[in-house]
Amino acid sequence: MDSAPSDGTRTLVQVSYHREPPGAKPPDHTPPPPSNSPWKLIGAAALIYFGVKEYKSCRHSARTIYGYSVEDGIVEYLRRRGADAFATAGSRGPIDVYAEWPRERWGIQAKASRDGVAKLPGPAERERLIAACKAWRARPVIALHDDGRTTYYDARTGDRVIPPRVQKRRA
Image (tube, rainbow, N blue to C red):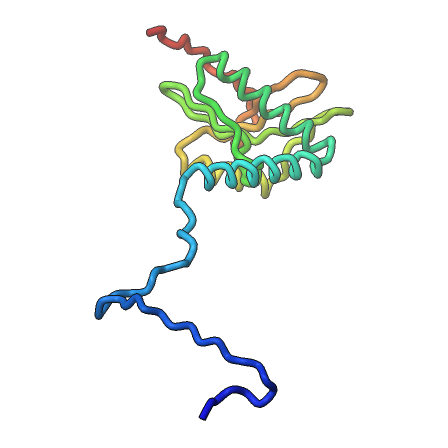
């Protein structure tokens, strides 16, 4: 007897005459894994870095930007005096600028004023600067910038100090 469906349609059965050898795996149709190219990671990191940098530069106040420019000016001046100097990232700690000459190190806390006289840091901030410089074996220095001029003072004694002048050797 015919086993056709009762609604009058016929069922088509597909028969394969090709047989796989025993133990063979069917073909894999999954997509290939993503490449581990370092350039993709570098590009993503660059986009994130510049995006964060742009965001941070937009959210700083004019006063903060002025402080950063003063720190950069101090770094450039000390480099002209022969120091290896650099500003710390974000100026979050007690030391804003590190400077090192062949025989001397300075840890500098910069204070600036656009309108008036730059104020000395309070006793607690000076003690933090002194402690940080002691760990680094550096002289704690306070740089006061006002009226376009920077003067340097020893944080322990309050005496005015002048950065050493060292000629860098030319190779």
